[in-house]
Image (tube, rainbow, N blue to C red; front, side, top):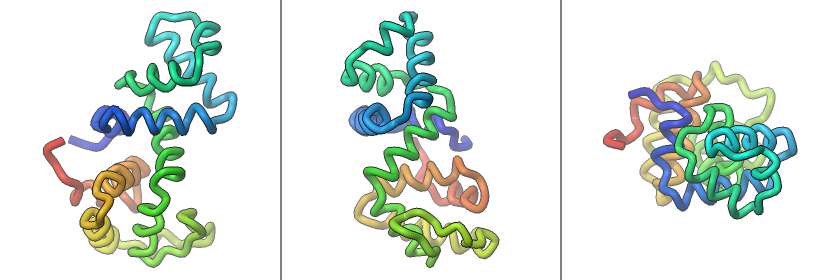
Length: 161
């Protein structure tokens, strides 16, 4: 079954979804928050004004408990979490691929065409063998969502989820 943002979200343990949501609600800008507030209000049959005025803890719990969020929202939630909580995993993967980066942010002039599917898969296998298996698995699933040149990672991801 292909990886989708919602599938990745649903497979996360609740404690990680809560951490992801805490990061989002603490650091996101107004527009990003407004989109999620509108979605939560609709999903929970609540008025937007009530959701907007709710304490962050409640917003975090509502978001974490919502297992079917729009893919762009899930993508944003995962990206923020990975950049803040799993930066070491990102750095390790980029180092395995010898991709020039600054603290996990790939340099703009990097030519993705230099990445072969085989090279990416070898690096993914090595990352999965690292100490932080959960963070590595989540990061690699996130990369698959981004498409080429990362799509081939799906073939090396653990199955049975």
